[in-house]
Length: 482
View 1 (cartoon, rainbow, N blue to C red):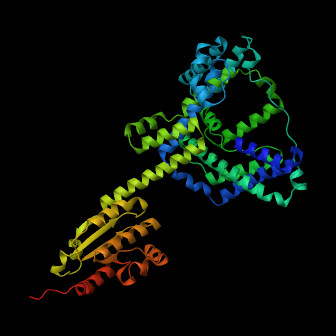
View 2: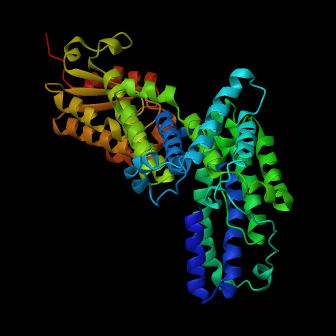
């Protein structure tokens, strides 16, 4: 969000010439971002987050945990981290070999307190107590300023009224495109953060209400010159690790920051950076789904591959891209597996089952082939379906039974058309029975009926299809004379 917001600011300045003239455009874009997020909540966009697979979520959480640990690794030993994750990974040994003893002692003390206090009493907020004790200890160590967080801003920005007085309709296109981009990114980030929080607290969030609340917050923030925000996964995880279990945790976090701006900031500036790094490292460790990762690795299948890819992309490239790639891969593997299941469950053979329901002349029993499909038909099923069709030979007629097909997409209809044409090219008569009403309507809408098969050979009722077969199949061929 910050990177895209900075890009919007740069583009607006380039468009208007300077910051003063670009300010209404910038503020308007950020305010519109909040309005879009409110709209996303109203149209219930959040309901789609449930389709994120577990390997993607587990990989995303693990990637976030690793990122937190890596970015705090240098500070833990009293050094400033280099820019870029690759530089950090390539130089992991440097802070260990050149550690600042004071920084390491404070960081180690913080870790001991965080993991030790819960063994004494789980009612004591370990992170807060560790922060206070380690900070007090640091006062006797005379740390250099570069190991302290330093001064914290204590002023509140003023309301930017230029967005109302200097707004130009010609800027609406720029504002809408960039605001929609920011709102989309913020929505995805927020919903993912909510899922992570649910997974850690064993609760269930209201995603749509979350989006509306965040949109309102971003709208108000923009009016004071702030950039739009989203669900901060790392901050949320830190809050949960500190003991937060409800919305009040976020409220008190905001209130505490506000209090710091009005006076406590002068005390917070003495907090040692190594102490904060130790706190965050425990957060990073806590967010990693070790149990889930262990299970997924043992599977050694597509889920394992998705997990590894999501972790790598999350750590070395981008969090949102990682989720997108993971969802695409999960969908692909799911469709592949569903196609295999449908192919395995779909029965084929002689019309013995139908023969129990209708009287088919004995001389036709060996000439009619039943292809009973079971499950949804989509693009993942195409290859297996075609192979089944090509293997059918020396038959006079084919009955395609779709009684157990709940859904078919455009790709499935195209494949069905291709298979039926294959049968027709072999000189076989084709009858389709058991077609659901909504699938029958799709056949009509896409001209499958009558272009591929006439309506009298496609039935949305098995009974009607059986009746047709009972009265019509014998007329397709001449019964041999005795």
